[in-house]
Length: 419
Ligand code: USQ
Image 1 (cartoon, rainbow, N blue to C red):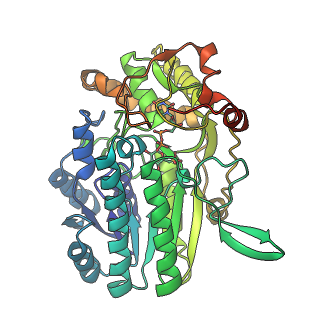
Image 2 (image 1 turned 135 degrees about the vertical axis):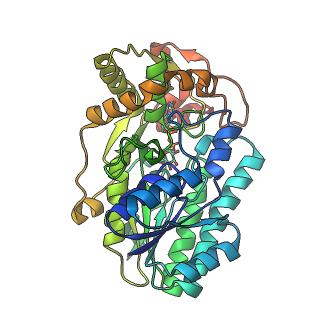
Image 3 (image 1 turned 120 degrees about the horizontal axis):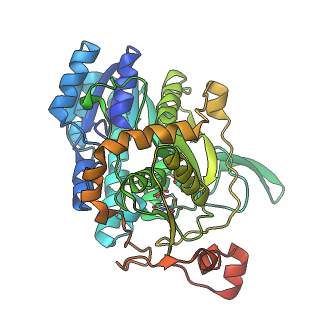
């Protein structure tokens, strides 16, 4: 297949490009290197050093024996997107080119507006360019499990049957996102649905959980240019990746609130496996389908204990701290999302989180000093209220009694405020 990867320089994009090329696919990428700039803005850098783009392109050429077609451009510029699709004529487009951080989007009005404009406009440009010059291509769009929020009922894969006033329909499951970033993906989902329904495009909207990990099989382990980034600042580090960097430099693992928040998690190698399955099994023309993409559901305190246990086998002694939760999110809640579609297509979950975490910790230990130099960026201070103030430590007993920790009904009854 001829596949365009939007966001090819990112955490997922670079491993995906290597994996798909190793399977024989022709790859084109587009990136404006904004992820590097955002992490820089937060005062951080990738814990694992990553090569510049020309070195990455050189590695690709040497290892795959062919050129990587690349557009150094912004998805928000329509001409760039149109010209890439018109000249490359892709069979599929994987759209990973969005601003991915909830805290970054919650910093202030400028960051919220930037996030929604960047994400929504980039996706709109892709949809219009597909309509005009790549109508048969399959759009694999990276959404997020966070689009659904944490409703008090099970979460289907995108759609559910509903009977209302005696009539039945199959409708999109409600989206109750919990940050301006997650909302940007809700808006995308509505736009992609429209493009499929009205223009006959085909798309898989991937509701992906939180990704962690450093390795995929296609990477040459001896070549530093193969590596992908691993961020750990409060905006661009995801929970498990942050815990692992904290473990290797002796910082306590930062559980927000009680840590009862449940999310779907998956290793990087599973994310790449699932995206590949979606690509290899395209929907029909005009079809909009939704995959919930994660390996399993865990709460974030349990994950801290897992990192602690694995760290101890490697000679580390990670401690766990409960911090005041900077986010307005429910900490004790029902969370049972379906995830059958990918399993039906042949997804084989890695399952063994401990082995995966041991690999992450082993990959990070050589970069201990680099992480320690930037330890200040680990401390969260972006609150959902808009205030910038460092989080206090919660005694564990107190952590289980914070307003956000109490069940939703109880909190509503007491009128407790959040964040
Ligand atoms: N959390 C901690 N400690 C930390 C960081 C986070 O307890 O040091 C908690 C958060 O409060 C939250 C959970 O861990 O309850 C997940 O937070 P996260 O920062 O790992 O993930 P999130 O903000 O949800 O966003 C990440 C990616 C985003 C993707 C999303 C998938 O940044 O791009 O869309 O995961 S999902 O969470 O399923 O929506």
